[in-house]
Each structure stands twice: as structure tokens, then as C-alpha cells.
Image (cartoon, rainbow over all chains, first blue to last red; front, side):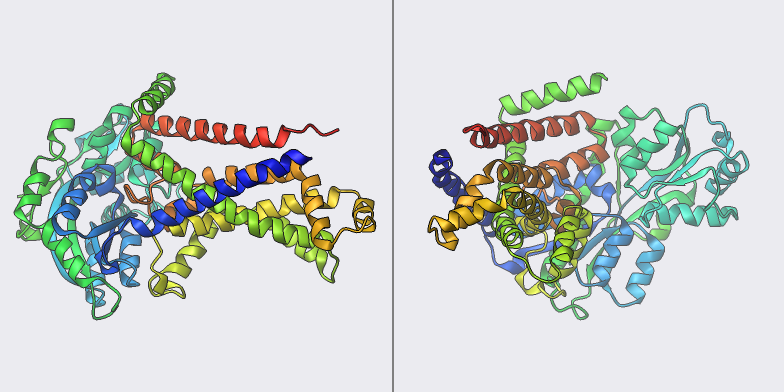
Length: 290
Length: 232
């Protein structure tokens, strides 16, 4: 019984140590003033491809800002922006972005880069969508043959695009037996599709980054509707006074700067054999993919 | 299968080479979860002992609430903590969302009911007459509580381990309130989730192995303390 007494001070010291260490990190890391923090709400694809791991440290070094990257779906990123809980967004969901801007939530929406969505599926291609040129035709064939389709189902930019294509195909997939929603990110959804030998819509970047483990083929690509376009949006400072407007602007300017655009152009070539994104700063959306 | 072996190999090489990023993530995990466990010990043992040793109207409801708290889903805790810490939320002025401090708070909320529930059960299991005997020997109330805590040591150490185990392995709240920010709030579990979604399964497994190794080391120390004096 006395032994416990002996270890008690030891435990107490350990406690204090851990406590001080814990609080220490909480305060010490952003050494700069609070306004130096920028909350970047973005899509999972920019993080999962590793692009942000290259760009963020560069930006921090250059400007002294500290970027808190919150990688969620485009839908959630825009909800955060609409609540003033993020300073700057890097998203890819055109229709939702336009609504976001129309509602006065953002300022200065700028084109950063694009890649494309692709329809991937088992190499055997049971729905024979390989022969189709149009994404909507491919989706129709999948529906007609009741081949399994795995959807993100998470309100992300990819999910929004998928719904747009179903609409164009005139099909209401929800509730159908062959239509399954994961509610997960792109990487995990690709994993589910691979495991179940299903079709899914993916962004090319994440697909290329994960290709080695999947065993899924690109079956349909190149349709203009499949363009995947990333914009940077600064959250409206006038609406949410706590938003770090200067930091948001600095980050947005950085994303469209020549330096970043040059990195985007070659990012992924070394590892995946082809670039994951195409830089587009200063271009018009209508001119993309031409 | 080979991916698991690959993962274990990678875990070892990351550990041996003292990979700075992985070491940073591991150290942060231990600090954050350790601190959260300590906070939960103070609150959990304090309230658990009080409830165990007193009787008051509605006590059963309180006990049921504590026991239900042991099943608090981390994601729900994460969601509530996020909403409270939002810039424009009630505690927004503190500006601690997406910091290690936010993770500590969320994990402390998760661990406290676990520690409290086990403490409660442990203290109630002590024979009632023991209390009377200690008091009869002239102990003050404070001395009595101290003796009882010593008496329940075995179970209380189990409470520490359960609380720590609950939070070091937790991912839902950490990713929500911490944001999995590289070099800042990325802990072992959130890094594992991210590597999985990147398709780097070997790295994900390596991180999992490292988490288990450290959890084992800590539990070994705690178990030594617990078992130092075998119960009669």
C-alpha cells in the first residue's frame, strides 16, 4: 500500500510535464500575432494528391502567414465560408460557387487550374461505356445494365458534377439497387469501387495518385462536361469581420502567381508520368479544354 | 497481405531512422492525449468519488448519465466542440479551433466520463464497513477519501488506462476540431486516415503500428505501477 505513495510524486511530476508540454505547443507554434493565421477550406483532392504539401510551406515561408488547411468536400468548404469560419476557399464546384458568390459570401473568385473528371470502372466494362463519347451516354448505359455505380454522396464538387451528369442523362439514380453512396472522400470511394468492381466518377488527380492499388481503368474521358475547374475565393470580409482578409488575399494572389502556376504545370509528372493539374490563372472558363 | 508486412517494415524503418515528421506526429499524439487524460483524471476521479460516497436525491439518474457518457461518440463530441469554438460561436474569441488545445479539450470531454464511471464503480465496490472503520479510527474526512483511493488503486489505474486508450485511438473528434494540419495538429490517428485516403496503405499501417507500440509502452509502465503490490 505504501508503494503507491512512493510513485505518487512521480505521477505528479509526469502530469505536470505533460500538462506544460501540451499547453506549450498550443501557444507556441504560431509565433506570430493571431491575425497571421489563415484558415484555408479546400477539397480533399488538393490534399490527397499532395499538391498542398508542396505549396503551403512555400507560401508560409514567403509571407510569414500560418495556413490551417482544412481538407473537406467542396460543399462543406463553402458552408464554412458562408459562416465566416474560413478565410479563403480552394474549391471545384461551379454551380455552388456561383451561388456562393451571388449570396455575397465571397469576393474575387479567380480561376486557378483544372484537370478533368473521368469515369472509371472494372477493365471488363460490363456496361460497355468505353464506346461512348458523352458522359451522359455512359451513365445511361450503366443505369440500363444495372451495373454497380459507387457515388461519393457527400456533397463534394465531384458529387455535384456526378449529379449534373445524371440529370443530363435523365436518370434518377437515388434509391436504385445498383447505386450506392459511400459518403466518403475520393480516395476511399475509389477504394470501394475497386473492391466491388463498380463504376465511379473521379477526378483524374486522385485517380492517378491511387492508381497503383486500384485495378480500375479509365473508361470514359474527354467530354467537355467532365472539366474539373478549381477556383480560389476570398471570403467576404464585409460580411464576416473576423475573416483575415489580408491573409486570404495574399493566399489567393499566391495561387495565381506565376511561381505557383509553373509548379502546378509540372506537379506529378515525376511520380505519375503525367501532370495532375493544368494551370489556368488569367484564363476564362469558356476557353478551357480547347 | 504483403502490404501489411510492408507496413510493419516501414514502421520499423521510420522508428529506427527517427523520421522527424513521424516523430513530431507521435510526440504530439502522446502530449495531447496524455494531457487530456490527466485533465479527465482530476475531474473524473473527483466527481466519481464524490458521487460514490454520497447519497442524494436523483443519484441513480446521475449515475446513469455518467455511465451513458462512457459511450459518448467522439464525432459527436467533436461536432459540439467545433460549434462552440467557431470564430462566430460562443467561445470564438479564444481562437483555439484547429489548435492542439482544441483536441485536448475534445479528448478530455471523451475521457472524463470513462474515468468517472470506472472510479464510481471502483469506489462503490469497496466494503461499506471500511469507511466506518477508518472514520472510527479517528481519520478526518479527507484522510478517509485518501485511504479509499489507495484501496481502489487497481481499478483506478484501469480507469487511467481506459481513458488514455480511449483518446489516443480516437480519430473523429481530433480530425474535426484539429483539422489534421501538417506539423501542427496532425496526430497519429488523423495521419492514418489521411494516408489511407491517399492510397498509401503501407504508410497508414506503419502509423498504426507505431501508435500501438507507444500505447503498449505506456500501458506497460502503468501496469507496473498497478501491479507493484499484488492484491492479497
